[in-house]
Image (cartoon, rainbow, N blue to C red; front, side, top):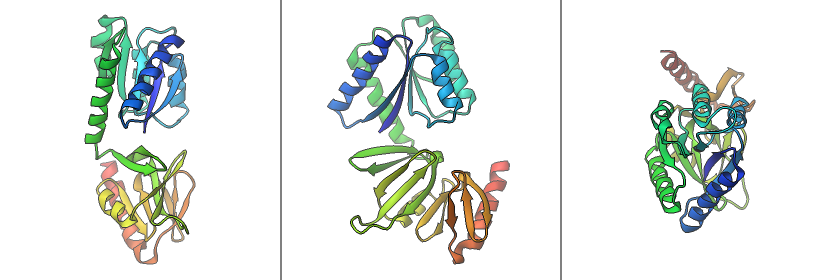
Length: 246
């Protein structure tokens, strides 16, 4: 599922874009979680408050208050670099300026639905190629796309009814899925993930401290380190920090 922000100061335009995404979802296996914003200030404040980021930002250029390009520039300044930005606008003269914020598409209104759908499908194909930054898991009846950096931990969960149940923990939500935890440990070992226990993988980016055989994470989780892994975990984290600082 892709998280999409639609930002336009005209409600009719917001609804139009939303309906095009819903129509595309019906035609394909793509699913969208859509949130709408009526101003650039509102969307920028959403990011300033450290809310979960979006995969796709669809912005009008000319809006009351700060315009779409200024909004995108503000979001980029907060170190949000993975969002793919699509500008929908009646003003072609802003196209060159939009390149400053690393724009995926600059489309002139009115946008034909089939053109819009074609661009979103191509964007989906682009996301699929970014396997070094995103992890796709099956949760309930849908696919969820998680950025590596937003995953805090992966835990094997005990369940009497579901075999190989896993919890994917992020700052704001825990997703349930199924899989073999050692397979994820192997697949993610080159992306700053480390298995610290037979049932736990952590993201080293979210480690706050070690104490008493436990690791404390950015969301206040306290996770046990397997006895045989304590030295390996601390050595690996030390090397990770040295690499990050350099």
